[in-house]
Image (cartoon, rainbow, N blue to C red; front, side):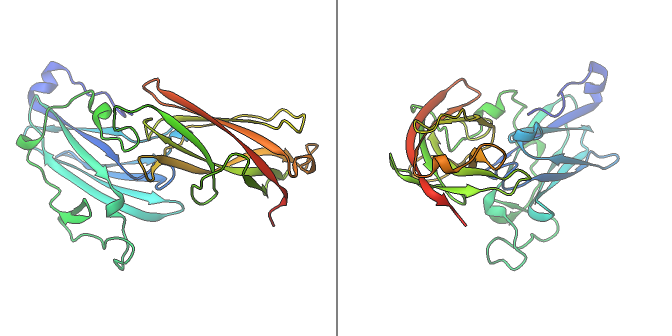
Length: 304
């Protein structure tokens, strides 16, 4: 996502330069982190920006750009603080350099799982001392000389390493299950029915999806289901959530509540012990897609 155009008129370009901070990483926007606070310094007046995270909300998702203009030689920097709802600081990252008049440079910044914070240093790293920042799990100098930065490349986002689509393989999707983690689902295997807490309580199963050779971020997951035993049309689900790397080259997405009944005229009892065929299609921005289907046996009752 490009948050602002990288352009300037000739007169301005002669005295100013632009540093495009390209933000990516392995934390999932909208899942691992929900909000990003950014303090920007451009050599004149500092300012702040605040972004809600989550491509499903039509808001900021990874990767994205933060262009900063500065006069020739001016110190430019960004300090990013990523939060998990309601207000838990997960990662803090600073990046700094100098602007060069007439030049547009790219400074790659990764928000990394290795840099998740824990004040006690048990389940994450302790906050870095002033003047340093976390890079690859260690405190380091956030400053990179402008002479060491590459020119801005408009295609840099497409070149960000993608654990889910390393290149060269055939797109693949597997239908699974799981509320708090991904679990395999055998053909004909049992899926537990759960009751939701809505005003009109619904009944659902938790679908999990494993995929590989499709983009981790920005892919759309389309889920449909039909029961050969119950004559009822079920609404599809479309989700633009990100996936997380798992094992054997697969990336997973789980906890998808697929609703098929409710207490407002669509009773759940006819589904007890019946079959439900679940079909999943994952499509990415490159036009690649894959589809898989699996028939499950619904539980004979609702989980308490």
